[in-house]
Length: 346
Image (cartoon, rainbow, N blue to C red; front, side, top):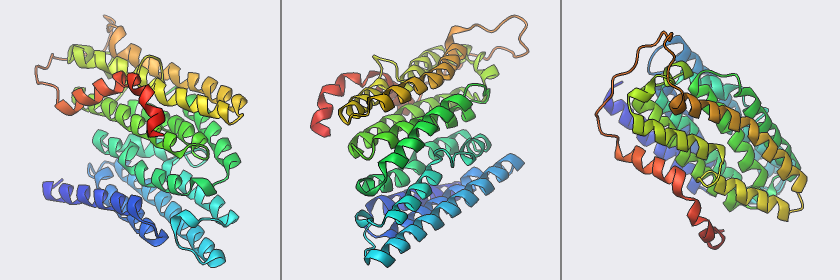
């Protein structure tokens, strides 16, 4: 793809995201979502492979439907209350439609079917954008309307997302699909707490973006797309693969790594809200995700390739690791000591 075109699409992505997260009016928020959708489509389909074209088509259809539902819910709310302000979402039916629309935008259960397929058909860097930046505008809309949303519906969708994200990731061999189901599972943790502590949802989202970025950038550096090639990539960049092991365990939420922090705070908040059974259920469901994170970590660093392998060993690369990967991986495993500062932020 032409560098000028790539720059234009990247700037359009930033523009759409900025418009949505800074707007107070529903039409402006909707326009930002549309700019985002239209600017990511060429980045998904740029390889012209049939799978990439299929991914772009699926992405366009689901996002167009979700945007139409956002517009419909805001118009219904304006019809009944006379308010176009995002924070004044008070009509019950409009709130239910909006929750469904944002769940479709994010790829939460039961609107999750498009996300693993789209991520699998996209290049790794585009997959990183889809898993991180593209989720910011819908999460921002959830944050701004959190006081109006139905907690029962959100809790139900969150538990289903945590269950399905963990369950469907168990038998995957493609790393992008595993990361897609990981994203669905993490969205469950974000959605379950947003009616009670929206700032905690944003903290969880920021740390998820940090850890996922570290993993995607590492995969892009060692050029790995599936588990069988991940097993032989340890010779290419041993130090980076060791950091990948720790980042995957952090994403799984194991102490004393960064990923344990949001899970700990969410379980604490759910217990304060007299929702201890819900906290127990979602904690047990996160064990499903722990299994495939451990399998990825095992393939990345702990196993040596067997002598009967069909894959040749990779050459050791002496190219220095980028500063961005170094910073993101270190932050992904060492931020737990900031936890005493969290009460001042929240």
